[in-house]
Every structure is written in structure tokens, then in C-alpha cells.
Image (cartoon, rainbow, N blue to C red; front, side, top):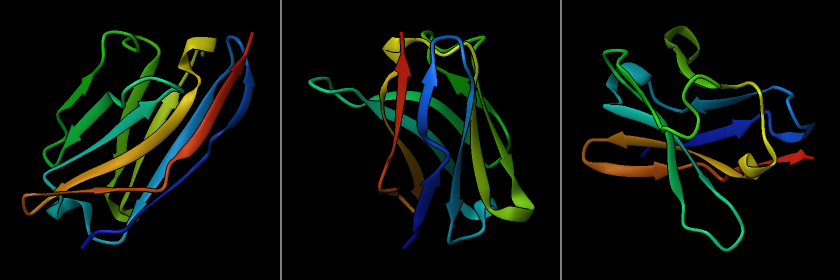
Length: 115
């Protein structure tokens, strides 16, 4: 199993920045894909960004140019740098890992952007 612990959420003003962190209990070299998802009240969970073990990334259209996913292999940590935040980015952000065919989730971290 993989345990994921997110941190870095909080309250920020419109146009502000936050950096989320996801610390994994396994070496992220062995995790096929890691990603960030978010879920706003009353909405389905949606993909924000992915990064593969080879370092390839993919970002949702709604965050391209504003958010960036990255990884620190030495720290077994994946980050989500969020810039130019908007009120519509308000959601609970979840870290996800695809490991040996199974998906693992963190507990989530709240991001609130005030207008």
C-alpha cells in the first residue's frame, strides 16, 4: 500500500499563490503515475494534473499556464504550484498515486480562494 499525506492548503486571495505537497510512503520512482485532483462542493472530482515516473506531465485546460506539477524524488514528494488563483479553484485537493494497478488517495487539503 501507499500512504499519501497532503499539505499546503489554505485561504488565499484572488490572484494569489499556494504550493501543495504530497508526501508518499513509497519511493515515487516505483509509482507509475501521481496526480492531483480536486472536488468542489456539489461537483464531481476532477483531474488537475498528472506526472509519470518518467517525468511527463499533463495539466487540465482550466489550469494550464497557472498550475505546475513537479516532483522531488529524493523527498518522495510531489508538488502542485498554483499561481493566479481564482475563486473557481476553491475545492478540496487530493493527491493520487497509481501503484501496481491500484489507486491510492490522500485525505485531501482545502484550498479556498476569496474574491
